[in-house]
Image (tube, rainbow, N blue to C red; front, side, top):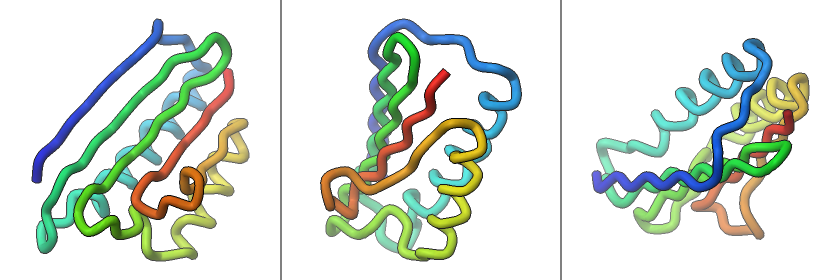
Length: 103
């Protein structure tokens, strides 16, 4: 596995609950991306904006979906929705998952 990480902007403060939910979701997302049976490039980009944070998770191995289990994606969407966040594939690119959480 070849990891890459980038961070842009000034970190913003979140309520503790939002921060904890975001951490748990990122932790859940990293496991399927780090596929030991099909390693490749894994990229995590974090962009801090004035009132939100945008996180993109890129899986560069065969451009496979970051999450292949649709039910799992639906669960993550529901959890993020409760704290004002969204999760979706970026522009129909199944190997890039985008998470956005507003302050």
